[in-house]
Length: 305
Image (tube, rainbow, N blue to C red; front, side, top):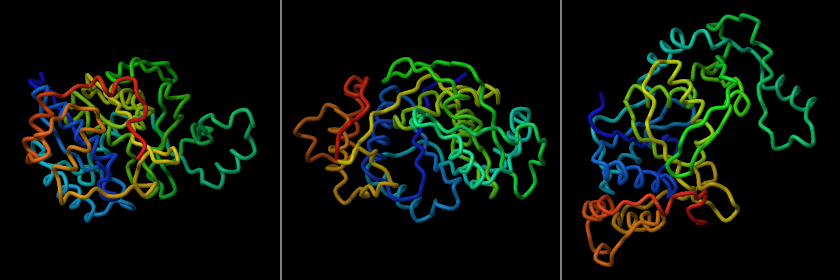
């Protein structure tokens, strides 16, 4: 029985925090605190090819400077691979299988079967290895997860009722690569369940994975978050999501109060003139007391930067 709401901020340390990740951090912090809940910090560093300790240190430093103090110890996914492997081997063993298809093979198949009218359709794995009974422990094997072919809905508190069939939108996703790396969709779902997360507030770009993650949690017999909030995104002038991949500028926390006020303005939250000279903790206290989801409802774009 969970006695209080639990939210989380879960950045990947592949670069410094940028304005898009900052607005997510501020929104998730103020929202869960407005409900009297705990705000957990999870460093999603399972991608050992791209994640770097220097970026983890930078994220922790920036959050601290901004007064975004987390409850409990920081969780590092890189230290939890044994947990993911155990769940894959036991609770998910009957819906996973080994795949030894190369990128070259799959690219050739896509090119051969490409249809002009289906350019915007997702490219699904053609299940070449589904019935081959390949060895999951073989060095050339990656592990794929079969998602249910069922139209499923969840209520997003910002975006409304969302329907999805993960088998048709994602297909048989890779959850463990040949190099033993656990993929985001699995690690994130498992940790949300194990940490008893009740409220998930994150970017709209993650919403297409939500039904799949709910199904993973159900199959693993882990708690499913009660509330989802997918935030509208900050976009650049080219119409792309503001992200590390698009070289978003790292935030500057030398003037943390100014940075917090800017984030709150982008989130459409109530501010007053007196806040301009206030310390971060006072700005956040005001934001928590006046937190309002309404300016974020039914929007896909937060602003163009």
